[in-house]
Length: 443
Image (cartoon, rainbow, N blue to C red; front, side):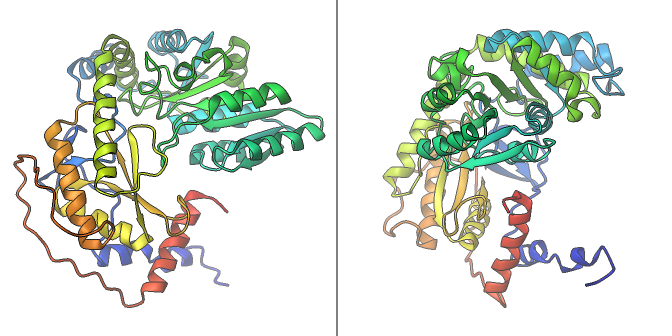
């Protein structure tokens, strides 16, 4: 074993190999506002990997809210919420959010990731259990692992029998449990079986924590998330939501009963030891919360686009898995083929993301697509056309004639003949897999 701590950095070749092969899909440098179309290296791309569900990231009123807050409060609070970093705008937004989702109180963290880290590590103590869905977001897993003395159990995705098995295990030890789920799962795009989960929680005396990162603004008549979608809002004991998706900013909320929020507020290390959210970001959230409630037509348009794309992909022979939301995964198969497909789509003017193992099961790599209220019919038609073209070239769907209906577009991207070859394909794939396995922390 080497005594140089940097040796692992030298041996980390997965990124360089992907870059050399021309299929590295990460850290694209966006040069414009985050809308349905962006510029990358001076070329326009239709965005399919954003979580800007309601299209508020470039809304003039949201931008104005950020500017006005910066003018009034400056660019930074220069400290943590615990010390000098709380101002009246933070508290105003917390009250507004709590009222919106029907909870007594809320606390605003600097990021959504910090929200899960802080709340979960605080709520789950020594001798207690946290039970998570195996497809829960990485920030949930991180928060659970940071709990001091708590134990994490996991159940198979949306498998109620397996969840009950874990609850029986907790009951046999005579202790308490917190069940943590995503409202909408970020890769599969399906919705948690909340009625069944809530019933099991009641049966075994557990509490339920719902991460509404992808469901706030999306699910429910008023966009309140999973609880409203199932008409079971009071059954959500703790609600987490990020401001970086439908609310077009950054930050994360935890909402619950007042005593729960007071406890988290005074014990969450990721709140106490992190500088508070800058005023401009809070100002943007403030306005975005109003628009979310005042413009329900945005959510209606989002679902119209979602249904159009799901039907369109399925009609072409694509497997969209169990998607029930604006997140629509397109099954590709092998990891390397997913990287290849994304590179080809990018040249065709489509900016999408590959999701490979271990984030998804081996041999079930996907292209994760997500939609906005501001995608136009022209955008959606072009997406379907380009997916069909590239997928037929890669043998993902049957060949034959390309769709006759083509969207009129200003894109004029020269066709490229793709020929992917690697000196040692197995070694290359294994190195990439090791990197992503460590990143997703699924060991």
